[in-house]
Length: 157
Length: 175
Image (cartoon, rainbow over all chains, first blue to last red; front, side, top):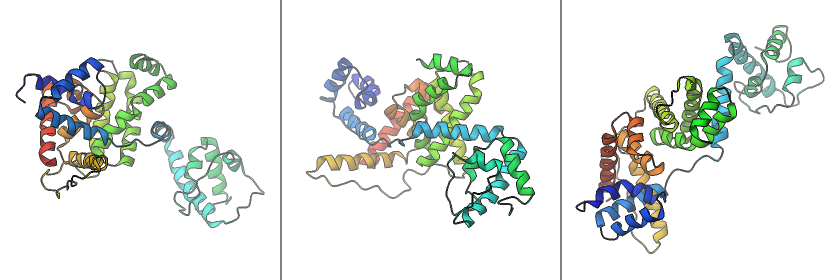
């Protein structure tokens, strides 16, 4: 860069390449690039970088907000709730994965609360049912634990 | 609604206002995290953790810095923590990796340009963290060198030097 304008143009090149400059400033940068090979080469490189910015996940905002809700709930659940969720996740997972035709005649309280939620379908007994448990209230979770202790459905744990 | 107003409302417990901040800055946080951890799934986790930490720390946010600078600083720290915990430092010897080949010039200029653009991003990943982050924040997100300095923990002048050294090194590696 030998031209004294190179420094100020160099600062502006990222905004020029990204189309963030107003028309007048953009024209001033362009006129300098027309006569300065060094700055032109730099602008071409910066333009390449900007053009190949990584794509954003389509559901980025929803993903962030969903993840925050999940982590906030996990952080506020008492210790016995976390332990219960872990135990019950295993128990439910075994129940879900071992039954090809679930029997729904006798519906305990926690199952009633689960209705309307969307359980994960998984062959992995360790994770099946976990999202459902996450949406259960503490009361329903306690009922589920009580029933498991009494030999209720899924009480294999 | 301005960031300041959203922050004020969010501090009073308005969750919709905080969602507004997520919508406004989610992309920047994700891009900053991605430039450091290089994995989109991990970058999403970092973004979630970043906003969660910001949500919890919001009562103590005095507004001396812009919210954008504040949240991107949290994101950069969070990404560093992830790299440290995973034992995977992103830093690498920029001359150690295999050369990234350049495409031969051909009449299909558009395709060649696209290939060169992808190659430029791959070469960018080889730069030291501060240079890489300075370039990413300046080019992709249009941050000023003062803002970049706050995020990478250096002065405005040092941020500028990191940016231009990185660009110069990138040009050499692309040739």
